[in-house]
Length: 366
Image (tube, rainbow, N blue to C red; front, side):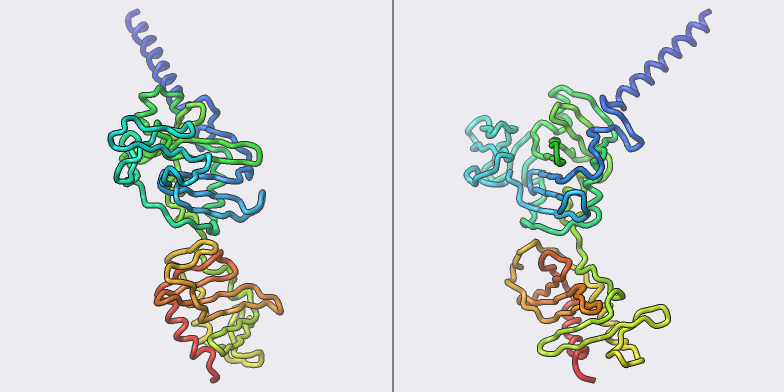
């Protein structure tokens, strides 16, 4: 009888543990194989995602609704602007001197004190501990940026923590609201506060109605490192084999190369009648196509060295149609490239100077 009672108590205890675990792992929302659903957003409906970590602001936005193509904007966070800088309604900057007592809160946002050294205090986090803001830039997003917008369809978390009290919210680092994530579709807007406590290896997210989640994946990391992870760094996207004619312009000289398919591969020839491929020109163009930028400048951005002067241009044609182009230019001792694909200049090092130097031989008469 005692054995049966003990066994029954064991079953009850195991059931209680299972129920507690299910309660811990399960939020009020439904679950999917990828985790707990925070917001069930229809696929393809997210038009714009805005991330502000108190240092820089990142916007990832579709160029056209329902079509491929994403623009990434990286700008200085409004949090870092002075109090009289004409902040927009979304900014929540507060000011306080070292001995002025509690911080003054503006626009109904969280209390964030600006310190004499230009930092802030919001429960231990200072702006000096956040990466310096990137230059304000509008850039072309890469495939990872397009996939990021789809991460919200549905938007899932690794775990739901329910609606914790104020003490837990402080413990999770969510009280200040310094880091924000905003998601917009054609018809709705979702706003979240995010924290990534040092040493935890994860991020917490709080919804507008106070529910808290643990985020999985790389969403926060991708947004925080948008300049390196979400920006298209291709100098141009025209494939050499798609062209049948390439024109190289260097100084006052130019040279037209003809491309034909021979034995299943495309090869460059000095003219339409030649049967001998131009291996030097082929190698030179291969080097040009492998040019990788060290920095991608934004739309309309002028390099710190000044406006670059174009020294070399290559045009790619298919019949009479211009497929694309690449220009190499110099400003002082720095080299830059741009193309039909880029939104502005790209800083390049090493390879560009050698390409320009060797272009003289390429366009010179045999």
